[in-house]
Image 1: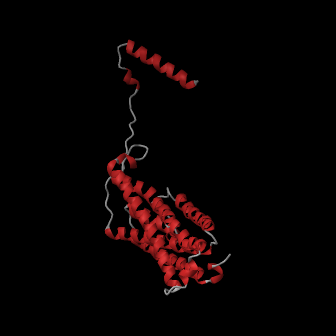
Image 2 (image 1 turned 90 degrees about the vertical axis):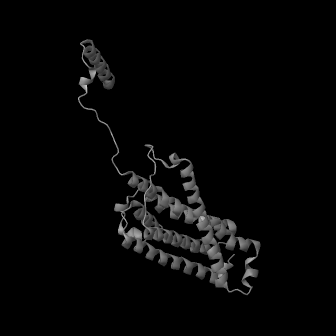
Image 3 (image 1 turned 30 degrees about the vertical axis):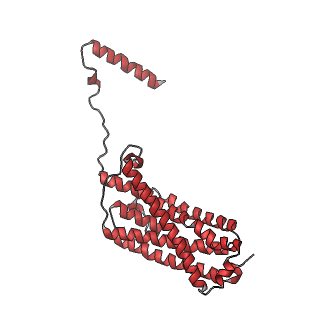
Length: 263
């Protein structure tokens, strides 16, 4: 009600000023004009640092699920796992073959999706614009930082592959494996989305040692432009430990008869 009265008063005042032969703009001695003075390059990097790590983590989690579910739990249902284990290759060799297959599926999913995103951006730059209409602009990343990013993604994919093979080995059936792997995807996505809007300068040190968080933190540091190679080394070193642990779990599961053939 008060805003309507204020608007009415302003209209009356403007009409009286115009009637007196004066310019109505004298009532506005200053005009506020908003303008974004931030570096467009940093804005583009900030946009990528917000959503690209999430996309990579989700794709690495989802990409190997079909292969992992079918290669162990699926073979149990088809009754082809026992004949496979009686062949000449050792059990660990068979496991490593399945493990690398799941890892490869994860990487193919990520590469294909990222290529699709950039092709879509080249076709329509507005596809990756934010609410204000601002688009991603060009920026450069040092080659060592790019290599760290690639190695972090590879290590995370290998970690998920080991866990997916272990869960598929433990499952008694194809559907049971799908349930376990669905919970694994949720467990990976929760910390990923929880840290989606965390600024690179606000990332706590422990994030570079925690699975999933270390990969997201590494990508944010690289894309922010304020690259700290010591933090990237922490992230990659912890990722190697996670790969070894996940593969050790998969080997332990695959080596136990009561787990491999449980009913």
